[in-house]
Image 1 (spheres, rainbow, N blue to C red):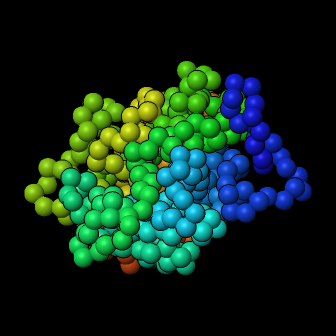
Image 2: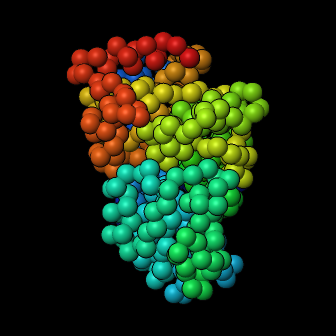
Length: 378
């Protein structure tokens, strides 16, 4: 799939046939839309998922990494041989590291210690310099984003120093993130559904994807419902429902797990980023880790798809919301990541069933019952 400017300025997606693409950046976007047929049959609504994990870096973060780098280049903020710095749970860092490698930039990534070891290995394989810090609240100076910002300014943090600093891409706050999805992901989804999308459901990490896609889809049809899927411990569910950015875990006297008290990686927020503030969200659904685990096993068994934790959370929310739209309606979501990056944690029974998560590992004949219950109740 390639891109051309269409009417109204949005990018039109067309097949390229046998035309060769140019480099890593040429592989970004144009991801396929797949129908999850078993769930369509279960709900009586067409359940579609955009396979963003088929981007070259394995997630939709390739889109924003390219947008952030290109914006910095246009503004003269990133010169040849320059240094890119970002605080990331892993996926954006992997995309940045790959793009930096082929553009000749140094890449420095700061990430929290609650992410899968696969991500750390991939980052280093792409040539990134990786600093792993303790998980902390965004208000803590040692939060991975705050550490990355200081390093980019040339400040010394916890014994680490980046002489000369670097360009801080600031994925949570830069609107290059949101604009990338307005320009690409939203138009692609609209074209792939032939304008017949009745609801769009997904979780938020930075908030850029749901913001950009919601804005584009609602510009085409204001009646499209946009629904946030939220993991345990994230504040966004209560913000959408009640206007207060809060989660029950914030009332605990001690932090029992990590940032958002969930096994899911890369999603959930404890604040309102500039990107999520651009989103047009109608409703929110809280999804448990246990529901996500059952759904992941269901998708592997019935669709042959090995998905990661955030993808599973998105699909749970999609089928739960499906009952809120008329039979025959189309509900779209996003498969953010593959399960291949989650084999040591989300797909590891020893890890998932142990404290602090204490999840029940799905048996071969019980996933249908649990997924059926999810589809029956909003």
